Image (cartoon, rainbow, N blue to C red; front, side):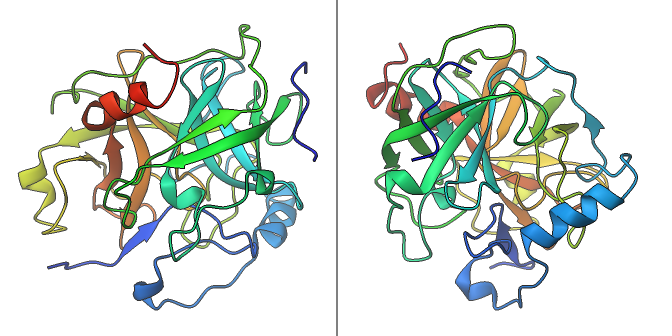
Length: 282
């Protein structure tokens, strides 16, 4: 296995935020939208484009700016699939849709590896395998309990570029500025980022979010943004941060990347007890 280096009513369609292992971006089966443009082709395109192309309105992250951010990669192709966050030396939290197929069946642990300690995709990093994948037992789809724990094959060694992030005990206030990060696409049909990107969004209440998605659960943190900003395919499982704490895990977008509709994140405060009960986080 490659990943064992421990020393180095709904008015809009809703899309989950990962890439299929068949190298196309993932959408719920019921969305019935055609898929095209493989991730591999997008990486080649990205190398030809100007470096200003970013994760839907984002900025380049500096090395060490998000030391808890990891990339989940397909172990065979080495391609980025989703994001995740380090919550202890032994555990990463991500989205359940990143580690299960369309029927909710968990992928074999050898299917995915974790890459930590870098902002450059597949460069200057520590690669670790996964010993156990634990999706939430009530996971249904990218809108319901879409969160999972990954137990690593060996503990990460913390440094300036690799650190754990604390779990939030409450959702951020609607006046807050929440930071998101990831290596996802820079637009709905655009190339993925090779440099980690980040952007700032604003929390809204569930009541306000229901104007766009009538069935949004209380366990979802909705983050609003203006058009041309927000999460996109490949950012799934990645973090939302407020006051240095992890407040959300990227789950889904409304309609398309960078629309003026809010993005959906699993609320960490809603799942904090479950995360602590199933990991070594205290």
